[in-house]
Image (cartoon, rainbow, N blue to C red; front, side, top):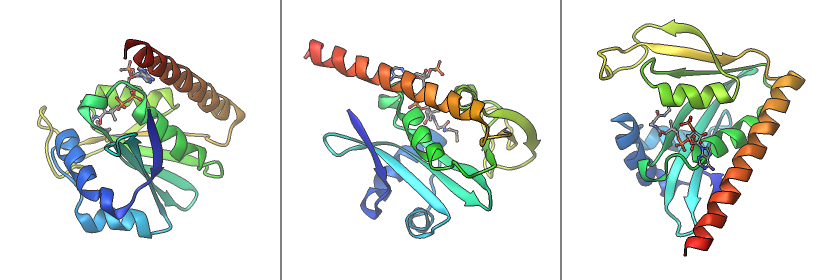
Length: 180
Ligand SMILES: CC(C)(COP(=O)(O)OP(=O)(O)OC[C@H]1O[C@@H](n2cnc3c(N)ncnc32)[C@H](O)[C@@H]1OP(=O)(O)O)[C@@H](O)C(=O)NCCC(=O)NCCS
């Protein structure tokens, strides 16, 4: 079982270690501290019962737009719905936003699949967005957005996704309990 809670200062070294593996680089300590202290940021972590951080995600509130700033999950904890749960929590708090946006590497198909389940669709390309090239030599970002997060259809999609993730997490936990 993992629980989702707001980022604390003491978590920062664990987040930096996760990001080094997930992204090949990490934000500075000061950048993470901003995530805690600034009112326009919200940053959540996923923590195991043993107190280990296995994932994190954040958003930046830019007027009526909400931008996803970072999502990363420890490779050992991947495929258990942790990124989905973090995003569900962050996006549920975005009910009055009229635009949701993010940037993702065009080569990062797994993350794009995750975001498309939340209704994000490609809307453009930002050339030279990343400081570092990826394995394909590209520094470009694919921009993905949810055009109308205030619509009933999008809210229903998010509610359905939450039910699916909750069901799968419950069944994973039950199977783990039976195997123990
Ligand atoms: C992309 C990333 C954030 C996904 O994290 P994750 O926690 O594995 O994501 P989820 O578990 O929510 O979803 C991944 C898969 O597990 C499945 N899944 C979701 N909940 C599940 C559950 N409870 N049990 C089993 N599988 C589940 C999802 O359906 C999804 O399937 P897919 O591979 O067909 O898309 C992670 O791989 C990562 O950190 N990558 C490197 C950094 C990165 O790319 N960040 C995003 C771009 S900035």
